[in-house]
Length: 85
Image (tube, rainbow, N blue to C red; front, side):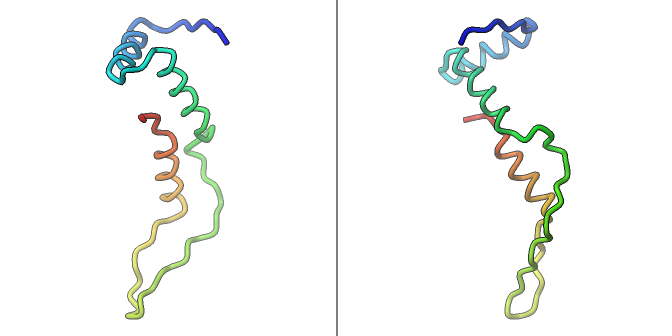
């Protein structure tokens, strides 16, 4: 589908340069960026209520530090939202 985008000159130059560095056509780079953006949750900063993660203990009884649900969600969101192939 064809569409028209009205981009600031500096953004267009950055996109064009990035596409050239990656060996892509501008159309493909923009498609990749839009797809990656659409796969991200609409509000990556929103807090979801989840059950706490279980604490893993070794046989010594030592409690290992664990990541909170918020920390894990943040890591996963960062990975999902990074559009760099």
